Image (tube, rainbow, N blue to C red; front, side, top):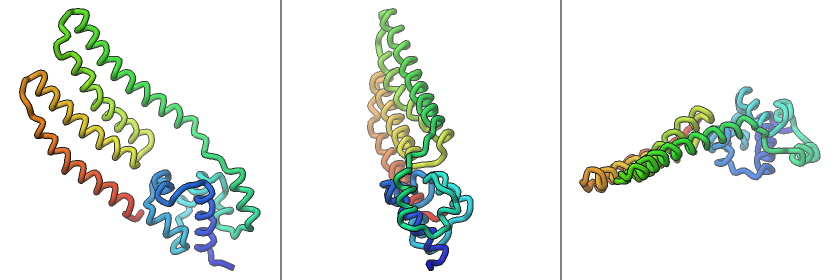
Length: 206
C-alpha cells in the first residue's frame, strides 16, 4: 500500500490531467506556484487541510476521497461526472466589469459629441485615448478586488502602464504641442519588473 503522501499525489495528478490542465494552469487557477503543485503530486509533501479542501471543492470531491487510495473505476466515475465549477457570481462580476468599461467609453463619447455639437471638436477625440488607461485601471482595481492576485492582474498592470504613457505622449503632442515619445523608454524597465514579478510568483513557494 502506498503511503499517504503518494496516495494524495496520485489522486491530485489524475484529477488534474483528466480536467485537461497543466500544473502551471492549475497553479494560476488556485493561486499556488507550479512548483508546489508538482511537489504535492509527486508525493514529496502533503497539502495542509485547508489546501486539500480547496482541491476537493475545485474537483467536486471530498477530502476523504483525496486521501484514500482509489480504484481505477472510482477515479473514472469521478472524472466522467466532473464539471467545471459553477460560479454564477463570477458571471455577475464579469458583467459588472464590462458595464464599468462601457460606462468609461460612454463618458468619452459624450465629451466628444458635446464638443462636436458646439463646433469645438478640437482635440476632444483625446477623450477616447484617455479612456483606454482608465478602463485598464478600473479593470485592474476591480479584478484584484473580485478575484485576488493572479496573472490577469499582472497583464492588466502592464496594459495600464503602457496605455497611460501613450496617452500622455498623445496629449503632449496634440494638445500642448510637444513631442515626448522618448518617455516610452520608461515603460521598458517597468515591464521588466512586471516580468520578474511573474517569474517570482511562478517559482516561489507557498
